[in-house]
Image (tube, rainbow, N blue to C red):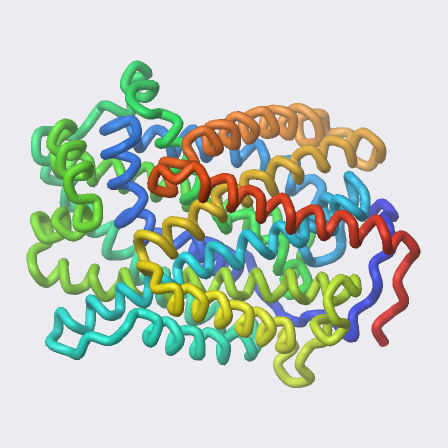
Length: 472
């Protein structure tokens, strides 16, 4: 039985879809961009974090997020609206903070999508030139990708799900092949055992390792955004959340362990620190040969595209939810008569993305070293703050409403998850300047923007206390 919360204004129509667990998991795991993480995050975690024990960091972060997910899923049946973080925080901590959370969430997903837009422009240009094609500015390729994403986001959600499913299977398959080959051969110097040694797990810059590892899970929590389009949301959303988190955690831990084993502990650290950009590609060439290298180079681009499309779908549904609550123009809450998609919200987010990338291009920013790093860092801080607020909202909600008497699901697990998330957030903020290339001023500026965006939402929610009229 759902607990009555502040009534949300009805949208012109609800989103439609028949997404099952598999479809939602595909979109969520695609947002995590598995191959991109293997290529970009693992070298940084191994080279600058806790070395060959970095695979264990994925396990630790997955445990914290599983604790978060327990409360998140327990509350899901009592939050009938789409909107994920927004609706959870609103139900637990009130409308003003809920609306502030919605603004923060939209800023976070916009930032992570902008980060990947920068990366994919550079990646496509490198891919094209490697096959003898012409070199063009990175933003040209980015705008081409943006146009394709705009078309898919406008159409029915099932189309995006099918596209993401195909791309995800391909990128996971090639990494699994690499894992099997390395493990079956016993690695370069035997299979690594560093991840089983507590002393090595806590060695080096463990804070940086946790920061990179937790950033790799961004997107798993977006299952609740697709509530209106799920076949049986009260069952589908919790199952998809657990499955997505388990798949991501196991895949990252095993694959990073195999990559470390492919070099040997000391050699892996040295290679990752010396040349993180080509660490995976060199590993693939050593173990799968030139053909494997070409396949991975292509799939890295499709992995980035899949992440962009997945994050676009999530962000568009935040626009849709905010339109339904009149924080944004009411038109954002309209759905397409034929596709049942949030087409106005989708086009609005595409327009915002276009403006951001245009600004970066005019400013002459490097697509990887600046756009990807700065926007990726912004998203890491944002998503940790969002999950921390959501975890607190879960605890407050169940303390006020005795609708679920499972102590583990409603109190113990969320409380442990809250502690874990606070530690991760503290470590991330402490190492934020490292992620941004050592610029303390930039770190303060980015955190200031996130705080400002949140405050705008809080003020708007506080001013508009009275229930808003229906959009019909």
